[in-house]
Image (cartoon, rainbow, N blue to C red; front, side, top):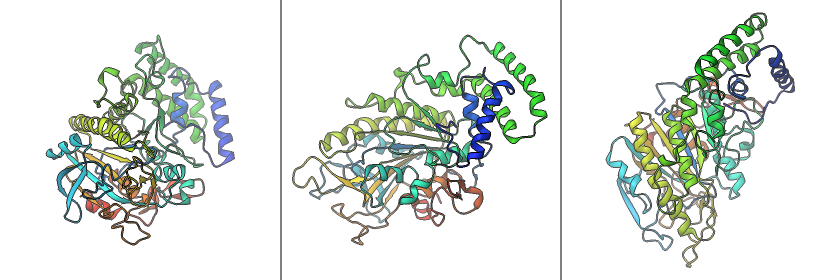
Amino acid sequence: MAHSNCNCGDQGFRQTRRDMLKMGAGALTWGAFGLSLPNSIFMREAYGLAPDPTIQRYDAFLQIFYEGGPSQTDTWDPKPGSPNNIFNTIDTGAKDAYGNKFLVAQHFPNIVGLLNDPAFGLGVVRSMQHGNGDHATAEGYMNCYWGNPLASQYPSTAAAMAYYFQSTCELGIPSVVISGSNGVDPNTGKGANIPTALNVQAGGNQGANPTVQYLSMPANVDAVRYARRQRLQAALNADFVNTRPDGQVTAYNKAWQDAYNITVKGAAAQAFNVNKNQLLPGGANASQGDLQSLTLAQNLLISGIPYVACGIGGNDTHSNNRQGVSDNWGATTDPAVAAMCKNLKASGKRVLIMMFGEFGRTPDTVANGRDGRDHYPDGFSAAFVSVNQPAFKTTAIGDTGPDGMATVSNNNLKDPMQPKDLGAMVYTVMGFLPGNSPTTDIPTAIRAAPPVDRNNSGATLLKTFGLG
């Protein structure tokens, strides 16, 4: 919804937009409708696609990014019996894609406990790989699903989702990134003339959170007075709009009216108002900031926002790995996400929650007693929890071997998956077929293109998890 900058590739269009904004102060009027909210809506442009209901499996998608690269061996891909394994395991009661027990590490009793209810499902891809062990580069890969140098030219997933959903979302806010440990480039068009997500802070109550103020009626203005302003501005703008067929004039005129509707309803402002007394639960060592971000994410999903992203840091565990894993996954993720899932179930929303970082961590560095693991981009995990989608199948795909050391280069990593495979699955279950038709292409800095590799359909993952 909101641009942090213009991100326009065409200088002529940039000048036109700047002129438009200058012109608006003296011709089109909009200033009474909530700070710069009309500007932000105008920046969305008049695009957007309706998701295809025949393929859409979820109403909303939540990305939880574990910045720093979490250990797959200590979370979703444990290796019982190996010297590389340091935590106990939990049997999910399901089988993986090869007929073996689907095991996870001991940190997830609440998430695994959800699986007794058919409304929930758990999936793991244990064979993610892109081969780049640099934090910034790998974060850029996973934040746009392009695992190669082309990642620098393709918009972030949050921006692509903002482009797709901008004309169909319930609150008028298609995509939100909650500031925090989201990695590099979580919310940028990378030079393309497309919207970016609304970037917000999780902190603050009604009187302090700037996002709540941004989406609310101006102070000391009641609904009657606000409606009077709306009618006055509509009358003032009518002659100007009717005598100028310029598409940008029409778009801006619609933008301030949309701003009026968003602010007067109050639903958007309320969605961003996180009450500290209603935070999702966490263990003794849970980060309160992370719980606040996850609670805000939950509220936004329930309120009808299709794409939300937040992050949890502290995963670059070259040392103190045991404590870092236990805090981030056992004390924070497991109780909070499980409680979130129950609340999402009650809302009736179909939601897919994805959890991953930029890469994993070396499986073998604990064998000599060292409490630390290093960067490992050659066989790591992405996990997701499904809510209110009965077709979802709880299982895991990918095999990194008995000690977690299998790699593509050694030709023993089973069913290797790249970021583009994950991305194709995500866009498809949200109702779009990236690459199958030019109608689903998005603008980039160089040309119109799908948000993931045109030659990838995500078919293997869709079939594995019952979503195809």
